[in-house]
Length: 369
Image (cartoon, one colour):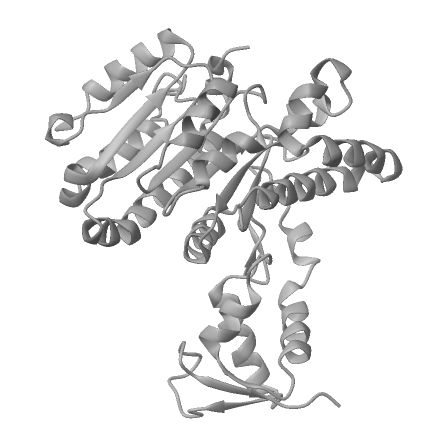
C-alpha cells in the first residue's frame, strides 16, 4: 500500500492530527530559537513520509500548516530548514506544487527540500552519523515498514531533537500475529520484547490488549533514549475501535509538558476536567460514559500520600508528579484548592484571589493518620 491510502481518513481526524503536530512545532520552535541563536545554528523540520500535501477533502496536511506558520514568523523565516521525503515521487510532486502555491513562500531563507528516499537501514546509517541541528521529526507511514527503534533513536539523539510518530495500531495489532511480518515487528519492539509481548497477549482479555501493546511500544521507545513518551489515541468515526496513536518522543521534560497541554486541548472529552488524551468522534454522543470515572479524586489521594508531612511549592508538586500521568497543571491547582477547603493542607499565602493557586504558593501536607 502507498501513503495515499492514509489521505482518505476522515476530515475530523486528519485535522486534529495535523493541528497537534503544527501546534507543537510552533511551541517547540519558540522555545528552541533563542537557544539556537546563542549557538549560532538553525532549526529544522523533517517529515519522512510527507504525502501529497492535501487530504482528499482538500484540507491542508501537516507540511502546509508548518510552512504557513514559518512564513508568518520572522525568526523562522531566517532559521528554519525543511525537508520533505516520500518514496512516491507523485506525492512529492503534488506536495511541491501545493507548497509553491503558498503565499510568500519565497520569503523563507531556506526553500523546502524534497527527497524520494525509502526509509530503511540505509537512511538510519546516515542519520546515526549526522549531528542534527535542533529538529522536529514527523514519522507518519501508512503501516510499519521502515519504522524501527533504531530509526527513532537516530533522530532524537541530538540536542533539541524531538519526534512525533504515527503508530498505526490497526495494522500493527494484526501484524503481531502474522509470521510474514515478524521481522518488522521485531525491529519496532526489539526481538526480546516482541517475543514476550506475543506470549503476554495470549493470556490477557481483549479489552486489555491495546493498553498492553501501547505500554510495550512506549517502553521500547524509552529504551532507545526517549525519556518522555506520550501517546494520543484516535478512534474510528463510530468510536468503537482505535485506528492509530500519535506518539510523542523527547529527551526533554519541557517538550513533554508542552505536548501534554496541546494533546489535552485536542482531547474530545475529559473526566472531571482530566483530559483522556484521545480523539473520539463518538464521545459527544456518549457523555455519560465519561463521568463514571473520577480521576481527580484519585489525584487527591496520590498527593496526600506522596507528599505527607512535606512543604513544597505548587510548581514543584507538578514537576515531581505529572510525568507518566495524564494530569495537566490545571488539574493539580484544582485539586489543591479542594484540599485547602477540606483542611487537609496548609497554604501560604492563605489570602489569595478566590479559586486561584499560583505556581509559587507553598503547600504543607499534613501527616497522614
